[in-house]
Structures are given as structure tokens and as C-alpha cells.
Amino acid sequence: MSFHPLDARRPGDLIRTNATLKSLFIKAGAVERLQILLDTLLEPAARDHCRVASMHEGVLRLIVSDSHWATRMRYQQKRLVRQLQAFNEFATLTKIHCKVQPVLVKKPPPAHNMRKSAVAAETLHDTATQVTNPALKAALERLAQHHTEK
Image (cartoon, rainbow, N blue to C red; front, side):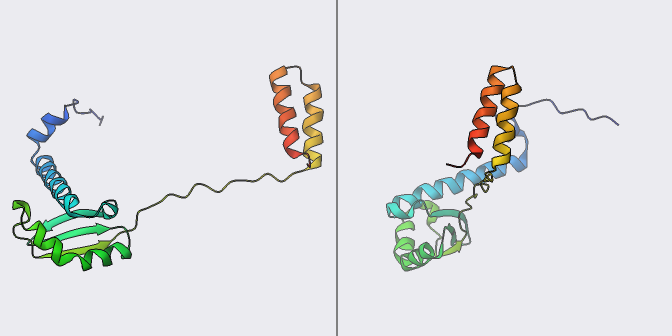
């Protein structure tokens, strides 16, 4: 059995012909529109911390970055519901539900610190004196300098 890849197609063609992708694209556009409308009413500091997750059966679900912003959104809920209901997209809005989902921050890998060794420095320096290639010789000398105590 051999694998025969499908012919490549343009994204627009895929969205028009695949019903699942089409409905997903429409939902993503609706969420984006809701986010834009919400951003017009949020204070500038809150815009980076509050994202629209969905709007279903009159409940607007927001994803917030931490509990601080969830609390602030709860305090503003009545005002936001009243103001958002003025838009057609939020006409059925009755409640705002906040879910805390911290932003994932990747930690940089730990730095590997070389232990300084006089023996390693001496060995690298001796090797550098025997090498004829000038680039390699210079590199070995620089490496030996890392091991010398300052």
C-alpha cells in the first residue's frame, strides 16, 4: 500500500467545498466580530487580558488571563451587558461568564555554566600550539581563555 497525497488546493476552495471548514470559518469570524465589539467597550488595559470564547444561549463566555481580571469583569458585568445589548450580535445577552486561563510563557532553557578547569585550559592551549590551521588554533585559544581563572 502506498501513500498518494491529495492535490494541493487553495484555502478559498477548501472553505467553499468542505462543510466542516466552512462552518468553523464562519464561527471564527463571528467570534472575531464579537471581540471587536467587546473591545470598543472595554477599558484599554483590559483588552489584552479578555478574549471572547463563545456566545451561546445568552451567555457570553470570556477567557481572562488571571483572577484579577475575572474579578474586574464581574464588577463591570451589569454595565457591559447593558451596553453590549445595544449591538444586534448581543441582543440576547443576559450574562457574562469569565474563565481564567493563564497565558503560557515558555521558560528559556537553563544556561549550562562551564566549570573552570586549569587542566582543561592547559590541554586546550597545548593542543592549539600543535595545530597548523590558523582558524582552529584561534578558536582553541579562545576556548582555553574561558577556562583560565580571572
